Amino acid sequence: MSGLVSRLLGRRPTDEKVTAEVTTAIALVPGVIDGEVQYNRLQYSSGALSGYVDLDAAPTFEHVLRAAHQSLRRLLGADADRVVYYLTGRAADGTTVTAEQLGLPQRPTGTDVARRYA
Image 1: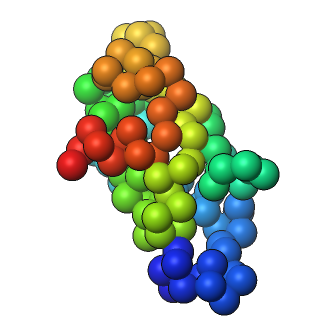
Image 2 (image 1 turned 120 degrees about the vertical axis):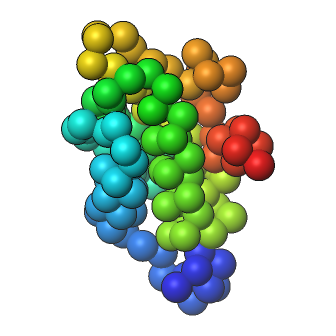
């Protein structure tokens, strides 16, 4: 069910369902080794996606953000653009990868991520 239809019917996926589906989408990205991601609905925005993802190399983090946003779009519809990302990547060489290093704001929203990959 799309995000808009779910919202109109008063049904939104649970935080656990969103977490599970986003985790699966991220795990399917080539180069993702492991990670722990959590989605939480927030009072004044659509939600927050937080956690870390262990990567083979820093550039893989771009693909992680894209996969996460696509998954959130399927589940939340346009509300996915209001989700705030608190994700961090950890490359195999010990390098920490953040959204800022990719030219995004420190805590990007789904809108920021969508613009980057449009």
